[in-house]
Structure formats: structure tokens, C-alpha cells
Image 1: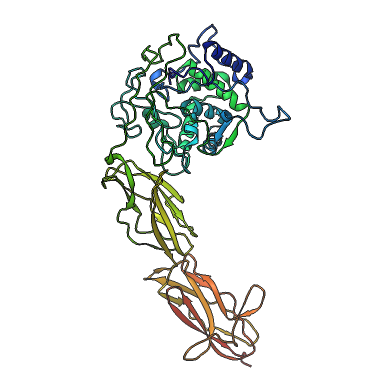
Image 2 (image 1 turned 90 degrees about the vertical axis):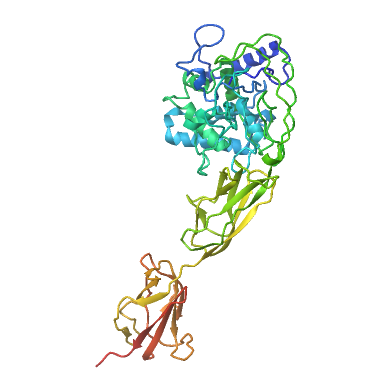
Length: 556
């Protein structure tokens, strides 16, 4: 991204000389692994290997934040015996943002170990691109509460990039804009987008997705980022500007010297870039009007941005943000006709949860992010094993959750649908998982079951359960030795089972049929009382079978 005119000095610097001192101090502090690749001559570096052309930069060479790190860097662990528990505000990285960078590093270490991507490089780029997602203003899934959009790339003070996504990511169907905490232009995201948080979507506004995509982009072309020249090539491919390279390098070195985690939303929040947009401070509120750009304190003319941008150092002052129209204001989400949610354990729910986003006029509202979350004591999951998914509404304002798969835990649980990151009421759905059932159970053979007094039955009892003629697997079965009465009860004499401690029991629960619908009972023992006895098996669903057991002395 070309430099942001009007924010070239780090905070607190008021002259070009101060900025020069800051850069010199930071450059002098860099170790061997952080040396800028040189073109062998003085002045501005022109190339770092085969850097891509401007129109192929990840960000479209959009503006970025040029603030430099504090001159006093945090100490790297081991370099001081008096390390503070927390560092300066600038060294703090919001928890979700930091987690996303580290997760991206781990992922790429597994898929492309030769790249040797350091998470601090992602942090440095995230700092200059979006101020760490505007100080970590993201929801629990890592998605910004509102899209972070760079200025319109219409050639007026910035590069000219015509629309490539029909406004799907940036809301502009005429020109492209850089999108999200890592500021990808839509055409680059279409190629490099990743699903870093495993929610089934590739969202440039999600820090986990964006950080992983940035990591893959930086590692392209068999780069080894432990080498200074390769790291420079990678950064220049992200934004083909030497000032950008030096700024990223400064933050990279700063973060390598130490950082600390801060809660989401409490990081240093930069002002909006001229011509860009800033998410609203609180979920569900509208952004405040953008103040006019302040005069540039540096009177010296600035060079033109890479890619043929204007040489005018003063981009046009953006108009104040207008309140959203009622037809564009989210009023809430509602049930869009979802029926009863009932499924048998292990089966998929036939009904799918569907919600509708409505505007202030009661009409449908498209492109609203909705998060579906499973809550309660259940092992039910959405398709793919996820307990939460985030999707966007379509042109009719509706969005349907993935197929819900029942687990083995029976009972009721709740699915909540809520507009992501908004302080609006959720839609609650009650789902019920019922136990597997069988409507028939029978022995698999017709052998006579006999045993001598005090001995065990030689033949095992095996049964098979079915439901509507099909195999009934995983069905609960209860086995009870019953009396031969009009109203049978548990018998206190005759054949019996043994519990794990060897004690006599005449009722067994927690038995289940296997994948073939069959069940083989544990060993059955006879006491000293001869006679004919009954064993009753009852399934979940009410199917029963009664089996005769005979205890008699063997013939002389």
C-alpha cells in the first residue's frame, strides 16, 4: 500500500528530522536477520530480487499506517533481569489477533516448513495495515465487528483497480478496495483466501483466515523468510513500496524484542485511513462521522505512489459518514420457518435451521453475518463436527445453517442464532435427540438353554433387534430374570448374571446392540434350584422377547 499522506511521522514526532532519527535508531538496533536487502547504491531501494509488479501486490498498494514503533523497545526475554510484567501499549497485541498470528505460523510450519515464517512478521504487517484489526475489535470467532475497508482504488490519489468481485467483499461494484485486518484486495483474496478458523468459510474480515492467507502469500515462490533478501521480497510483494518495507521491518524488529497479550478491543486504535472506513466502536452501533484530514506537518513534496498514483500529497477529504438508511439498518434476526428439530441418536436432523435478517422497515437484509451456536449438554454437531458456524444472509435476507447431526447423548439442547457482533436478541431453537429404537427383537437361534444346578449355561444367548425391518444398531436393551406370574417381577431365585465384582444380579441395563443389531448376553449361571425360568429382554421402543431357561440335573 502506498504511504498514507498526512501520517508519515510516528506519534510524537513533529519534524522530518525527528522521524529520520527514529528510523536510524531502529535500523541500528536490528540484528543480522533484520537487515534490509540493498540494491548496492544509496537512496531508495528499487528492487529486492524479482518483486512483483504493482498491480499484483496483495493490497493493491493501498495506503497504510506509517507510524513507527517507540524508540524504547521491549526487552527480549533473557536480555534483562528486570523485565516488566507488561510492556508498553504499543507492544500489546490483542489476544485473538496474537492467537491468529501464532496459529498461522504453526499451520505453515506443518505445510511449508522451509519457509520459516515468523509470526512477528504477520504482526508487523497487521500493525501497519489495520492497527491489529483496529485494536482487536473482533468477535469470539475472530471476525471484525464491521468490515475494515481501504480507500476506493479509483486512481484519484490512489492506484486504479477496477472491480473484480462485483462488490462481494468490499461493497463496491465499480472499483476494488482493500479488505479486512490484513487488507487484501478482492482479486488477491480470490486466489489466496484461507479458512484459518475451520468454520467452512474464507472471510477476509476474519483475522484467522486473513493471517493464514497472508502467511501463504508471503511464503510463495519457495521463499525462506529467515533470509533477509527473501523476507524483503515477500514484504515488497505485499505492497511494492520501499517506505512500506522499512516500516514493516521496524515493527518486525520491535515485536521480536518482546510483546505481551492484551484483551480484545483494548489495543492501540489508529484513526481511519483517509478515504477508508473504520468499524463502529461498539457492536451494533453506527460509525461516527469521519473528521476532515489534518494538514500534513511535512511541507516537503512526497513521491508518487507505486503503480502510477497521483503525485498530489493531499488526497481528497472524505465526506462525513451519513447515517445508514432504514432499508440498510439491521433491526434483528427472526425464525424463517424452521420446523420441529427432532432426530434419533446418531442420525441427521431432517429439518435445517433457517433465519431471516430484517431491516428497520421489516424487509429482508442481505450480507448480514449470522452465527449459529450449539449450547447445552449434547454431543450434537453441525456438519463437519463444528459447534459454531458463521454464515451470511443471501439476497432474500435468509441463511440456512448446515445439517445438524445428532450424537449419542439423548435429551434436549439449544441452538442459538445471532447477528454476529451485534447487541441484538438471538433466535433460540430447541432440539431433541431421542434414543435409538427397535420394534422387534428375537433370538438368532433356537437352541434349548439348559444348565445343571450350580453350573453355568453352556450356550450364550444372542438376539437381534430391528426397526421397521431394518437393522437397529445401538439400541438400549434391558435383560431381566422374571417370575412366571400374571404380572411378572424380578425373580429372586433361579438363573442369574454376575456384576463386575462377581455379585449375583438378575437385571442388566446399559446393554446395546452392535452395528449389526445383535446383542450377545454375558454368561448366565444357575443356582441350586431346579426348574424352568424366564428371561425377558426389552428394547428402547418397547419390543420384547421372553426366553426359557431350564435348570435340571443331568440324566443318570
